Length: 255
Image 1: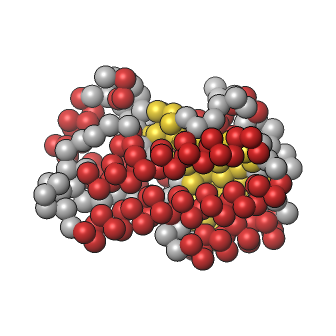
Image 2: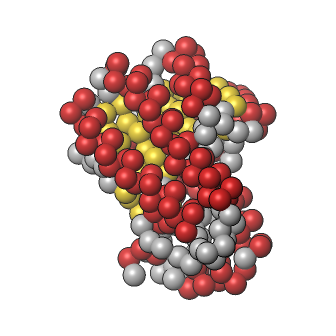
């Protein structure tokens, strides 16, 4: 049974919120009483997910956003504040995979795209979230890195570079903003049962079988288990936790 939090009167923003870890986290924020903005590249899916939360009695707004486009990230934060008056918590979750490739053969366009979304996208979101939180003098941000931000794996250089970068971005900003009442941390999911991982399992069965051998808990994680970690990091229970890269990976990085 997860701890319960009371986020009544607070506002949460989640990117990549139309499915997987983002959707589970948006639902968890809503169930804890927060007004939630669900942003996703797939605007229709974000709007549908928000409508389902609204129909269940929660405050929710779905919007489209390409996080790699700074003007869209800025507009996302502006729309959040226009709708609900403030921004207290953000889970910068939007991310993509890069196709596996020998490091000598990776295509520049794949490197550029995965870093545009996974690293630059978190930079743009965090930047504009911080502008609002700096004005308020409070807030909590959780950036989504990965076990790929903590370790290396063959044929994953571009993706892991993006996720290592998220941790550096998180730590530096966390030190800068801790004295201003804003906490910034990262969560590092392991192999989680999400649509993106389902695609990997289908297309790269042998590689995923090897990864599962290194999973001490012996199973995939769930999106709800990531959501639980994000809510804790955003809650007063984590008030002295700043600049961490928290593995939520079934023990993978404990090897």
